[in-house]
Structure formats: structure tokens, C-alpha cells
Length: 329
Ligand code: RIB
Image 1 (cartoon, rainbow, N blue to C red):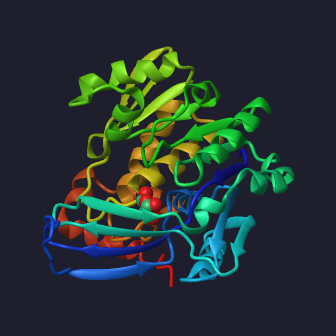
Image 2 (cartoon, rainbow, N blue to C red):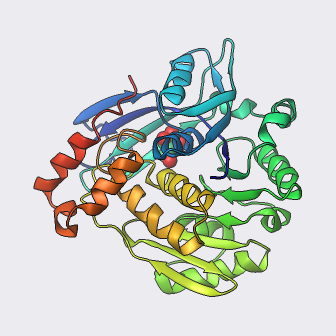
Image 3 (tube, rainbow, N blue to C red):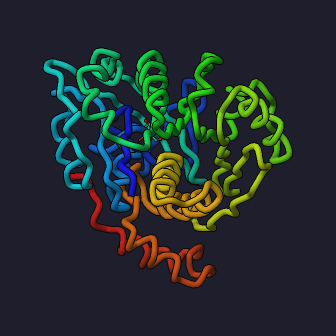
């Protein structure tokens, strides 16, 4: 199996559940509150990969305040190589404030903290270790110039580049030709393509714009509706895995990780999307970004269960208890 590297962010996640999101100036009571040493799109992807059994290394920066150093232990417990993670003194790590409503939808606010210090100098200082890897995952929670620098340099070495364009932002046009796989959700695809997306018919024209800019493959994540693979050969649909989601936080990160895992194991893009749909669905079965990310054994057990029993309330409980050993104390 190819060696994977995640270049990206850490966050300490504070997650509250509410009946409904507040309106402006409204105060609402939370039903629950959790603080997780486990969050940030980069580290979420690394942890999901570690749980699946990948050979994965994280490149990122933490602060020594607010649980930053504890995050190193979380990575280690989840089989993530931390040789290229450091802890910066007198600094706050990234943090995220998340609310989940009764429908299982979420809203997020993030503060960059030491994720903003993952600069080009840090990439260069760790280049020997980074360039030993084969498949790379990037997201957009570290400085854009660092992503652009690392992506171009790695692509010129023939590495495989996967970009999750989240949180969405406009990207310089020159970057697209260095990207093998881009994995937007519908909102992100609309923003980076400049197209309006109101339904699945709008995905292909938007994806074509990215393909014309030089991207190898567009993988559109449409959440509970599955995912689509668009490349020069056309479009393929990977149907959703139906579950009763409790918290979708980091389902997209889990999708990316599972996609990369399957890719590093030699699968084609459509097979990767099918596998990623399953793993991402499982990750929605508990509150928290990393809480319900499954191991490979848990994925296999889930797939053996009759489809009907995966989505009903009564059968969700055994699935949750099977996943119960992943709390990031
Ligand atoms: O994708 C989910 C993640 O986004 C959360 O863990 C939060 O930290 C934000 O980065």
C-alpha cells in the first residue's frame, strides 16, 4: 500500500447540540456540550486514515495552550505518524465551535490559531520526510500560499494530490492542473466553479469547468445523496449508504480519508467513492468529528449487516456500542 500524508489543520472542537439554531440576538439552551481533543479537517482525515489501517503521516502545527499537546497523544493512539507535527510555545491551537440541530445539520465557526503558522518554511524544513510519501491530502484550513507551494512542488515529483476545497474559497486558476482529485461538496463546487447548483443535474457542468482548468478527477460529495465521479471518461454515480445520522461533523473528512485509503490500495475512482460513502455514513453515527470514525474491522462488520438494519433507530445502538472505544480523552 502506498504511503499517505495529510498536510493540514488541527482544531479543538467544542460541540453543542440544540433543538434549533438561534436567530440573530436569540439565546438558546443547549441539549448537550462536548469538548473534543479531536477536530480540524486535516487531523480528522489523518485519524480516519489511521483507524482504517493506512500508513499515514500528519504535517501540522499545534499550540501549547488549550489541549494542544494532548492532541499528539490522540494522533499516536490512532496510528498516525507525528514526526512532522510540532507544538509552538505560548500559542493557541486551532479551535472550532460547532452546533448540531435536531435534524442533524451543523454550523461551524473556526479560529485558525497555530494552523496559520504552517508556512512554507515549515514545509521546507520537513521536506525530506514529506517527499518520501506517495499520496497527499490537502484542505483549506492552513495558509493558502503553503498549500499552493506544497501542491506544486509535490506534483512536480509525480505525487498524487487530493484537495478537499473546504472551507470553500476561491483558488488561483494555476493550481488546478496540479490536482489529481478534488472533492467538493455542493456548496464548495458552486463556489469554486462559479456555477449555481440547485440539483444533481447542475453537478456535471460545474465539474466540467474544473476539468477544463486541468483537474484530473472531480469527486462531488452530496452527503446523504451519495457521490459522483467526473473525469474525461464521463460521470459515474456512487449511491449513498443510508443511515440515521446523528452528527455529520467530519463526514466529509472521513469520506476523503476513505477515498485516499482505497486509492492507495490500488482501487479506481469509482470503487474509492463507493467505499468512501460507506465509511463516511458510519462516521455520522455519534456526536463529534472523530468519535464514530470506524476501523476497517468495523466497516466490514457494518457492510455485513442487512441494509434495513443499518438505518433504523433500534439497530443503530449496536453499531454505536461497537464503535465505542474511540473517545479522545
Ligand atoms: O470538517 C469538520 C471539522 O471542521 C471540524 O472538526 C472542525 O474542527 C472544522 O475544522
